Length: 129
Image (cartoon, rainbow, N blue to C red):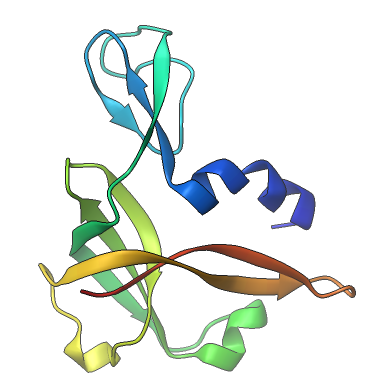
């Protein structure tokens, strides 16, 4: 991902902003312009909770690109309180200790550096609760 692509997504990455349909109440992350549940086009921005549980995970033993230096690393699908699911890197835990159903919270962390200028990209990562 190029820095300009990353910067366009800052509101949801930094503040965990989602869209909530004003008709049926469905919540979408990242935000949408049309409700997949009812087709309505009016939304309110809402912040997602930071607590949830791991629903599935994978340990990447041989990462590619700039992830080579941190291999092995874990990625997971987190179901937040309220039912929204998001993908995140799972950190601060040994891969062998990760379990489905494990409580986690989302924290604001450095994601990566990119380009010759070393542009730092921030976002959320999951950590054990």
